[in-house]
Length: 186
Image 1 (cartoon, one colour):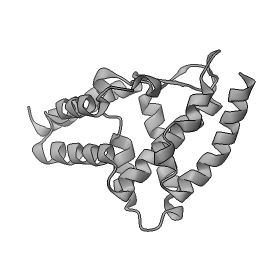
Image 2 (cartoon, helix red, strand yellow):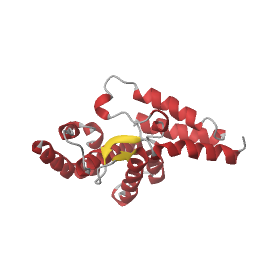
Image 3 (cartoon, one colour):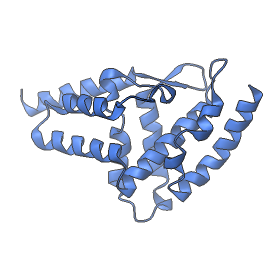
Image 4 (cartoon, helix red, strand yellow):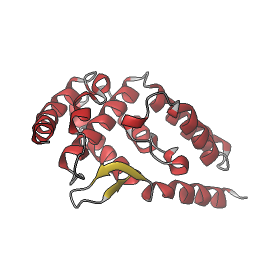
């Protein structure tokens, strides 16, 4: 397979994220796709660039775009169901499968960025993780969720990631207030 075919095969395989549904609902009441989540997460990172001096913004955008790439194969596992799962190892294997046909340098670069995002050891990766959690709780509070949706779960969800960056914590505070209101409404 030549490089053109390899890239197209990768793009097609990653395109499965458009049909991979999350445990989030849009304002219109339909399930959100992983691709939609990743798009708004990238938009958030882009919009906040001026507020985050010292951040490698190209790297941050790369991390948020790739962070859920592995879900193109096995899908999304809702956060409440992740206890006891080694989700990272499974997703890492799926990322490796997705990039396996790419030219070696591209495959290594994408896999390394995914690994960086998963490890959350660099400031950019910690910020990506915090923004990811913020986007999720924002979607949950603004979505037309089904009856019995567990808003209270979101009050603690991802807290260690969102609290690690003052800007993300400040953005989360009003979202948490709305979440608490919706949780109290039942």
